[in-house]
Length: 173
Ligand SMILES: [Zn+2]
Ligand SMILES: [Zn+2]
Image 1 (spheres, rainbow, N blue to C red):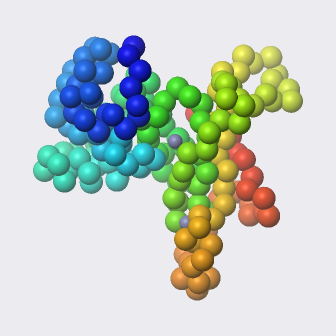
Image 2: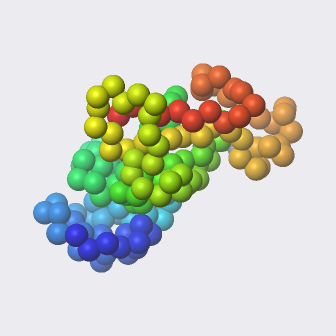
């Protein structure tokens, strides 16, 4: 497979070429889903559906969910599943990078993998499993939420316990 930059899929021609390469039927909604995720990495399915409708008019939410599931299964998209919030999608796949997410507003940013090679982190005990990925989410407050007045902040929901240090959590697929 030819390697392209994650944001290159914002261009429908690049998306079309990759779908053909993977043997996935090319449709306007599928191309729109791919470019929406490329333009706004870490979007959840609802945000992708809104972006697709802005482009194409009526597209069912179910079609968007199905396309996201298909693309994730084909390795075209990476699915990130933070505890207690909807799954997010991105076109930056295959490099085992990690994420930092804000407990209050849900903003998410990429964190490069700690040692530069998959799976990046070695568990103290692998229990005999062959480990191929370490998917860490650091939880905390983004810069704008740190500066917001406490009264303006929605209460964090049932996220993992708040501690002084962001606590890496591993998502279970
Ligand atoms: Zn925030
Ligand atoms: Zn990412």
